[in-house]
Image (tube, rainbow, N blue to C red; front, side, top):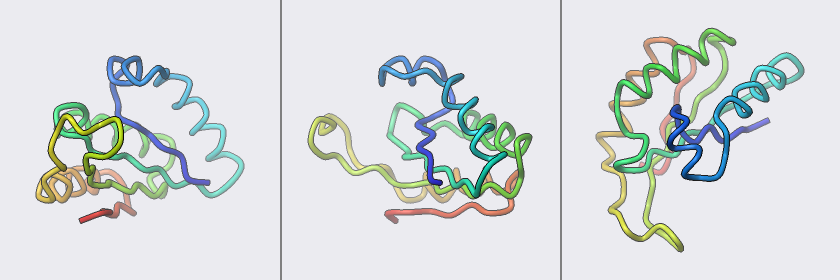
Length: 110
């Protein structure tokens, strides 16, 4: 199962009309039942801070350090053309941050 983990702040989830705690509960439940991979799309100015990725990776590791995390690069499209693409170096830096806590972290769209 691949689950989008949009970021790791309630503020960002509210902006997207979601709820972080609900997503976290679902991830825990799914990880108990099947193979889970998570994808976080890194959007400039929204969820691209190293501290946020560190909190996210620590939490994921507390569920299971073998959960796969895909850290992917954003490109402006459709309704989100108000910002530039994520710098590839930011994606690599955040991957390295997450890899301090998780065994399987991959980049995408770089």
